Image 1 (tube, rainbow, N blue to C red):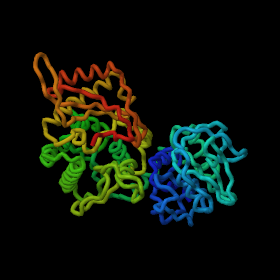
Image 2: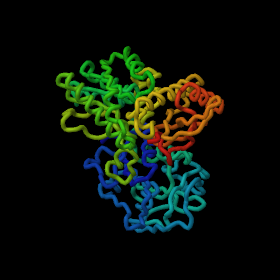
Image 3: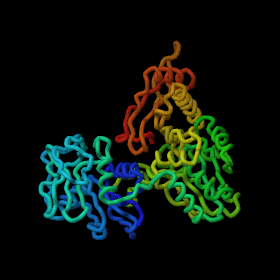
Image 4: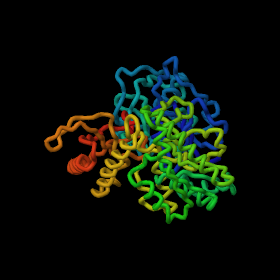
Length: 510
């Protein structure tokens, strides 16, 4: 039996945060949809049921088969998961008189319970539900209450099955990580062996076994994900890895040459392919964001197919797909979570390409990718690079794409990013970039009236990109940056700063 944790997703916006908190405990976990349980449950030592926008009282309540889990493995129900365990085992769940949402404090904790070890009365928790448990099932015991919620936590007697009506995964629950550690380590006995070094050792061994002496093609972008994937594969298969860096014409200013220089001393076999004209030609006249993504993905595959034919007997295509890509692109693999957008590096390849896909990072969050990269000695300037979307500036140019628009946005972006570095702000920001908006506005330059483009600057702080807050950049910096953009970039006469958080907004505008 391996030391893994299974998280069953009922559609909560916080499901991914549960996984992040578990990983922070150096415990590996996976998210699976509630209605698609793995056939083999032997590798999981504990199971967590997530929250949900659904109600256990509704005709559309989401049902899970717990016959192979309940009693046999430690089980924790969070919010909907807790109400599900109560309601369908003889308890009573009803609509709350008032919506129980926001901060609350534990007003009562049962003494001597391992579940609440090192957690004191008065500890802050985060509520987010409109239903509440009014009566517990038989053979259960209340473990904790808040002022408004009598059954904030409970357990079934004679088994390691627990339920909580608050969210331990969000930062607002101050002892949430401790509670998860109590459940997973103290009660379930899960070993804390999920470390960067362990991941590298295991993954390199798996890649060697999977790939053997086959040749692999990897698309490098200069970003964290593809760089870490490349070094992992290089450690596993060495010279059999063929890296290709494609210029799609939508990169940052001078990025094509800068990235190639960056990899020159890393020992990787890298080839640069300038296909910018090919991409821009196919994108001509298209304004729909999803169609632009699909066009870029299609051309990207075509370019790779062309290059694959130049690498004799290539069998694999490696991708830097990470866990948030998978979560956001696929509705929790068939589960109830909403799909936000498609990702360029998620999904199958066309039949004509005839390459197998290998994705060594697809179970990692971004911060985990960085830690893995650091454990392998990758340069900090690469690991600290801000995320940059695969479709590049195409989804930062709202509307159709032209070479002139790309040039304008590249100049604006360069001023913004270089300014962040000069002011010592770059490493304090998770991701930053500029958007070219499909609007013109009136301005005055000298004695002349102008009617030119508007750009939006965006800078956010985050841990993994699943949620993000806008960064309160100094007014002096924004003033200087705005002046420099308007004075130096022909065609732009207005600069705005985006102060939206994710959610409800996304980090990119398209």
